[in-house]
Image 1: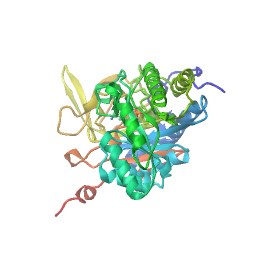
Image 2: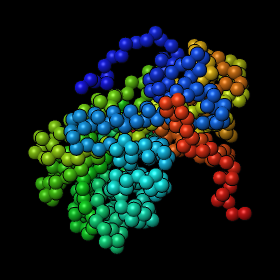
Image 3: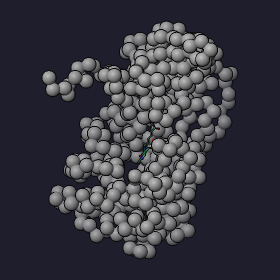
Image 4: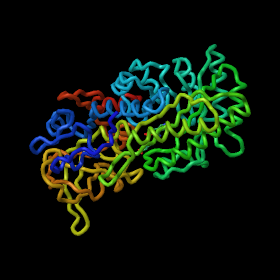
Length: 451
Ligand code: LLP
């Protein structure tokens, strides 16, 4: 089987190829324009209006297939669960279903999207550290595959609701392995000081296992962990796997239960900037699956069904956001601000995590990125910046500004601050553009107002 990491012969450098690590797979330059999925981004932006999220359908499908390929390559019994929080729409749920993958939902709202998309509910995994009774009811009633239980209270609640409904509910217990990955503090979740899961200290995780085994109408299928997001160093996973497989061994010794399923969460990092060098899905799959197999073999445990839960690495580089340059303000001797028709309402990541993005001008894509500017939003805060001091082509009012790698955690974290309508989402593929989420209207925002 050919490895996907084999060096690809280099074409003569052009600006778009230079940015290929942060652009969707089908991005290309035709004349002076950026095209994605066989669609001219400048024309699309002018037809649909901006701000606009554009997602490359082919890129999303290929990423899902990469996960399926490189996990099942090492162990047949693997499942890829797409983490819907990264980007969710009905069209996305359908695409995930078509690719044969499962879906992680983290709220009743996300479950409602899965239901609206006719997603096979036995392939739905329900997450969250504070699921409400209503959300648990909805999930169990809908017949979701697994609830990932996060606390003692929730164990009791799931058992109680399942008993009431006369159903057996499959669960995974979320374990906090005590591993702190190297990523932004806000998105580390594997360390002991975490609001998520059952910690390994003081025997809490084992107590949860015992309790799950006692309670009626609960089928404890296995364990879950998620150590964090945007992780580059795969050793963090290797360490967490060692901890959790040892815990599986302890469970078997102390309770006799053989863990059938192990979900190692998501978190694989992606390139936001050109210097970023994330691990490949192939390398990740090997570390996860081989790690579990090796430790199970050492401990004499049967290898469980292995699940991975990627979000960002499926959709982030598949997406770009298109804006129109509205004003250009040079603060002499300091910096030039290019303000666009969106901002922290469609991309909160810069304000929240100091995220970095690469930017290009979609209608001047053949020119060198010779200027350094700051792409600012239109909202009433100084912190409302999208990209600080980034290189772009010489830019003029009315140009289409393309911010790369915005397919994950931008639309899904969008808000109506300043009563800004949220942008449309367009899927592009094979020369076709289809709107999968239409732009909001003022009426959409006013719909909940009691007048
Ligand atoms: N599974 C669980 C239980 C999760 O909490 C997450 C992400 C994932 C899977 C998917 O992780 P991914 O493969 O996407 O890294 N808003 C932040 C990211 C928050 C991640 C939350 N959990 C950001 O914009 O960077």
